[in-house]
Length: 431
Image (cartoon, rainbow, N blue to C red; front, side, top):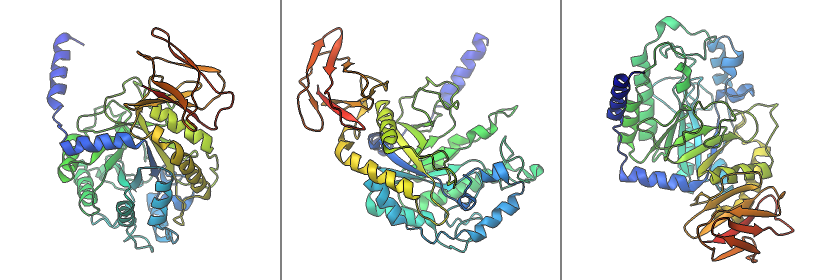
């Protein structure tokens, strides 16, 4: 690249940085960064097939045949308040719910299409309205996932997915589809009270286009911030954050890592609030054969490592077609809640600690303390870099003092107890 071109692109990029968050938005970012745990819910008519949320893309050659599932979708056991209370008891501070996934089915009573849970199913109930009411009642923030992709609508320009669903590729009409999305987003941000965040997905559907695809994100982001200035925006595009976004998403990975293979530049961790989304079992949407649930100990380690990176964990559950959360998922939520009742203060309102996640565990910190989470008791000592001698080193659970040595150059070396609490032994270092 020539210097002239590089300077021109740099100037153009700088000019594009036009978003200035409001004070309310900055406060919402701070609160979000302190939350540490949210629950992701992937639920739609795809749950009827019990084969995951990509069933239309992976198994059904005709979108119209797939759409017939709406007429059989009757989640008679759905109780929004039961969901929210179980999630709140687990220690989660927010819920992110799939308002519309790639199959284009809307889980609220949208006026923009009859392909929605009220008009197209015998259930005839607005799930997002009921969830919103329950969240507001219980003091849990509601975030809404919204897909930029649509495998059903002809006006959505064909990307690299949904190519075998029977769409008419000659009928693409981006301006019409873009207006449809913005009308839906306006509904969600006007009719359902305060929304904590809009969680976009699907930008990657056009990442192989020969000519860069213009999603017109800045205009869409501006619409959201105009309707609800405090509402946060995240986009699961696997890139560094775009102008107008308020937090950065990492799919199936801790920030700065790329074990899942989604991120081109894994080291590009921004200074925005961070969130890692991960499944409780294997799939996002309900899959009947997927019983490979993480143990409670594995979830706790994932949570502490995520917090140890300064990020929130958005832990996913795929509700069943009858409207219930799977029994195993409810069991994990309950057990996690018991642990969070005791140890939540070592995660909430903290930032990344001085030692990033490693073989033995992770660290978090606030102004007063460093919390050392030992999730693998394979080492007799741990060393924590510190610029000055600590005021004290104790077990979190019983306050017992622990032996340590301190050296200004080599840091704080703590001798661990012979018996460690499981699945996570927490040590408090008083700064």
